[in-house]
Amino acid sequence: MNHLPAVLALLVLAAGWYYLFFSTAAQQLSRIEQPRLNTLRVRLRRANGIVMMLLAVAFFASYYTVNEQTSVNTAMFVMVSVLILICAMIALAVIDVRLTQKLRRQRKKDSS
Image (cartoon, rainbow, N blue to C red; front, top):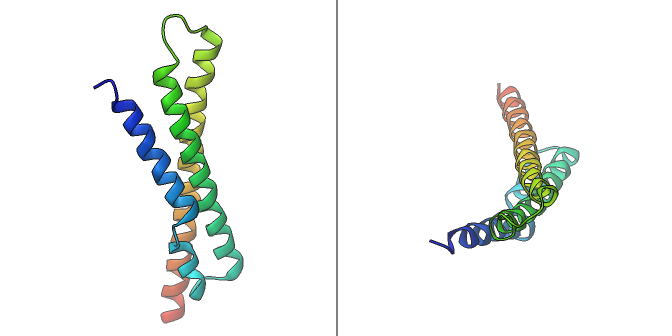
């Protein structure tokens, strides 16, 4: 049970790594999406991969460095960084969802 946070951090890091370097779903939309919007989507997803990798490090640090002996400032920095990274990840995902909704509306309008 002591290694569960490390496993979680490793899984989040692996997901971020995959999202950053190997996810090609956004590039495949270039055939049907405007080039400017597709470039934005690809950059958003890469940025989200970086945020996920940073979040993995913050998860790891929050479990293995914060204890009774840790200064309050350090503990607050680690916990607030986790919160900010989660909010950033959600914000980037919401922007991506909005782009997808816009693409769907456009495709529906074009097919009518």
